[in-house]
Picture (cartoon, rainbow, N blue to C red):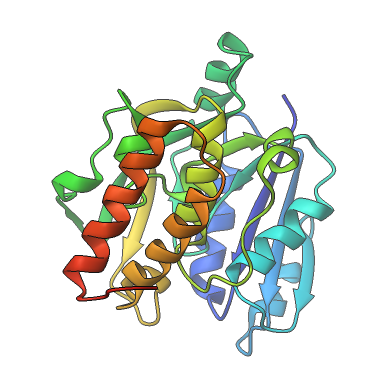
Length: 250
């Protein structure tokens, strides 16, 4: 199972080195590692000297969705793994996902549980973000419960549902995972195989407008849903978010 790893980055030079080091430590090494530099103004270009084997692509700042899409299009291999430059992997992360997919060849995407670290201290994950895996679609309907850094997926899924929505500055992962979950099985490896780091400046996940973009994604999703019960659940979640924010129409 040949894997391309894609890391989008913007002004994260020191953190990027940690992320790349965790990729090189994998017991199942990927076939290629693509860094998409989304217009960094720090020392990120130095990364090619630190790690000469990486594929480095620079673009003007166009956002994380565009960066990931550029990486997907450049990838030589059929399986894609994402890693955010803030995060790092357990050394057996890819090995365990490869084993899962080899045992479940009909499942084209998997994700893992995670550990959260803030200011170098392990923190408790809020209940709403804990993985269960019984009904993955419903687990992800209110909040994105699949960390991009935990995902391994086949390129066929992009052919089926499309790429990341480049109009979304945040919640682009929430939008794509829901589109995939509508049509495809997704597997959960319920082990903490990634470390998500928080506590530094300008993390997209701390944007105050997350629900605004979730509502946009839900409204868009309703256009593709035919099953009555599923459509009702999506509409119910959209209405709840609109009521919470005092919005009568989008």
